[in-house]
Amino acid sequence: MSQAKQRVTILGSTGSVGVNTLDVIAAHPDLFEVFALSAATQTALMLAQCARFKPRYAVMASEPHARTLAEELKANSLETEVLRAPDALEIIASHPDVDAVMAAIVGAAGLAPCMAAARAGKRLLLANKEALVVGGDVFMHAVQAGGAQLLPIDSEHSAIFQSLPEDPATWAARVDKIILTASGGPFRTRDPATLHSVTPEEACAHPNWVMGRKISVDSATMMNKALEVIEAKYLFALDPGRIEVVIHPQSVIHSMVQYVDSSVVAQLGTPDMRVPIAYGLAWPGRIASGARTLDFRALASMTFEVPDHGRFPGLQLAWEVLAARTGTAAVLNAANEIGVAAFLDRRMRFDQIHYVNRATLDRLSVSEINGMDDLLALDTEARVVAREIAGHLES
Image (cartoon, rainbow, N blue to C red; front, side):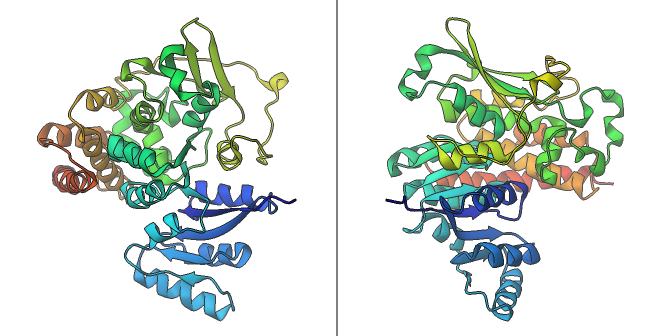
């Protein structure tokens, strides 16, 4: 008797994670089918994806892009319906016919559909850091209350998940610490005194991974690792003091777990997002990802370094916000999104991103958080403050 196909919604299908997810799905048509896709502005690519995968629904971030897509779908005799409701993302993330949701929308915009999927008890493949960074305990409560299955897709968190015991109830007693690896990005060896002259093109030229512009800049500042530390705290329910970061330029070891007996279990592989995506889709089984296998005979060396806080001052903010009031991580995330956007628009220098983050945290007082509405209001307030700070820096 053949097994029913897993129906998948992909939030952010035209980004790098979304494209890689579709690549894995295409390789296993007997196991998966696409239920719905969403994108921001890339209507041409979305049209091509709809033509190939024939989803029931598609969602675009704005009405003009939705209108264009609907017209193109009709012109090409494609039956995909473009949803235009204000809560369209939540609809396709929580629809009764959906089995799994790939959450790959960058930024806080992905929080609402992630919450909807969690409350609906979906298998939630989380590539959106902000759901946990902003949502924190509120998001995790929704996962538990809805009976959702939360599987991390970030290569580092997937590596940790693969290296942990199967029973989460044993993690706190058996694990000494988790070690997140970082490539160090394109400026690992660059003189910190020259970082003021970094261009967006240089910051987006990651030596190992092919990623979107925002996350590439975060890798260059190592803010991505700060966000991953925050994310790891919630994913694995460990005290922040038991989370460590080490720079591993070769990106062969994707992260490690050190146990109380001093043994270390690590997950290794080529730097290809299709590996954690395939693992998340197939868990607890495994399927071919399409990634190149690791050839140990060709590995020259693997090296490790302690992060230089002078070059990467934003990394320490992770432990700072985790020690502060609930919601402080949401302030950091919002400020960083504003700072990165200003840098990519060439309105601000690369080295000023950290200044915006630090100044926003210092200026904004976080009140008591009682739910998602409070977190979203805090996110909005933090963006206003960060824009004002960034505006004073613009040349």
